[in-house]
Image: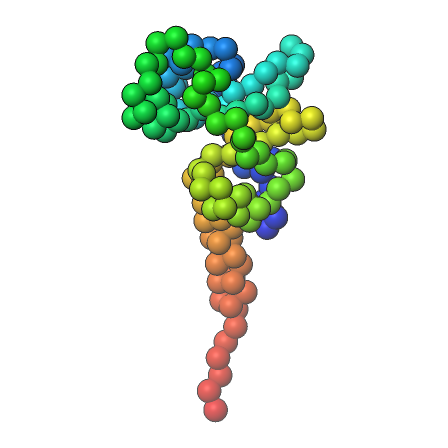
Length: 154
C-alpha cells in the first residue's frame, strides 16, 4: 500500500452532473433519484470533456431558495449553485484534501485535470476511509515487526 494516496486514487469517477441552464426543480429531482446531496455543474467544451463551473448542493437549495422565500419555479441551477467552487487536482494528497475541506468548510470536492476538466469527485468519507486504511496498514506493519522480537530478562 502506498502512503501518499492522491485525489486520483480515491475519487469516484462516477459523478452526477448538471448544467447551469437546467431547471432547479429538475436538478432537485435528479438529486433525489440518484440519492446524492451534490451535483457538479459543468459546461461541455467538447463531446468528451466538461469543465467544472459550479456545485449545487441540497443545502444551496434549502438555504438559498427555500429559506430565503424565493419561488423555485422558473429558477435555473445557475441561480442557486455555488459558482466559486473549490476543486482538487489529481495529484493533491489526502492531507491536501483534508486541509481544503477544513479551510472551506465543505465535504465534497470535484477533482479536475488539465484545463479544469472534470475527472471525479472526492468526499470527506472517501478521505477518512483512505486514512483509516493507511492506519490499519501501519498497525499491521508494526505488529509484524514486533511479533518476532523477544524480551529476555536477566
